[in-house]
Length: 60
Image: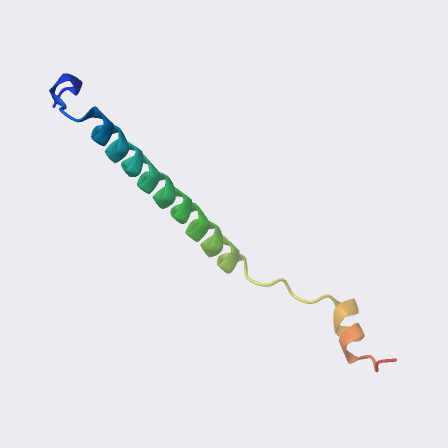
């Protein structure tokens, strides 16, 4: 299909814009999921000795 063969150029532009939007959303979703997986692999750092001591001290 050549651009000159398109009968409704406005409809073609809308379709291309929708396809572009879908691609952008997919890439964003992949980025968010990848970031979540990276954070999950890092895990939670161990508590420091000071934090542990603070948690077991009687409150005021």
